Length: 177
Ligand code: 5GP
Ligand code: MG
Image (cartoon, rainbow, N blue to C red):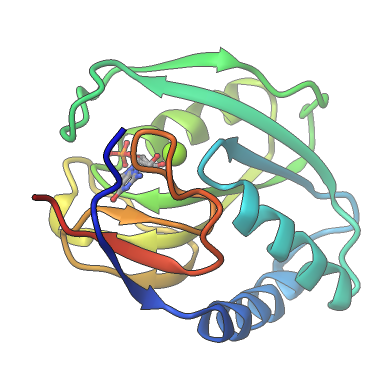
């Protein structure tokens, strides 16, 4: 499998600082028993850092995961999203912090919010590591956002290119050959 070259966009230190800022902004908005629901697989590294930064802010969330899939493995979202693995926590009457890696067309986040509300969440706050506003098909913004990026293909810090590059400790862009 070819590994196309990548170049760093956000360093480890840059991300670390931004995650602390996000946690400081999120903490005052959370009630006593929030549930953090993260979307696998791309958000796993971000979530691991965010939950520890939230802990430093005195937040003690329950943590749960969902796997969603968008039909069509191409670079353009089909707009149809499916639940492949649902979260296990009971969400009735709960406040949810929904965490994902990249806000792109907006289809995934829109679907996930609606799904969590159907499960009884009273409030769904969203925290995204990255936003590509140029690519939006559905009008939606994140409540908490790490960084805005241009319309490039992102890898690293949990985010993959054909399952490669998730292990990179920084966020990078792929140079397609
Ligand atoms: P949306 O439904 O907003 O179009 O899709 C968001 C999802 O698409 C993200 O959670 C992420 O999994 C994927 N995605 C969007 N842009 C990129 C990218 O540049 N690199 C990778 N690896 N995934 C992306
Ligand atoms: Mg994703």
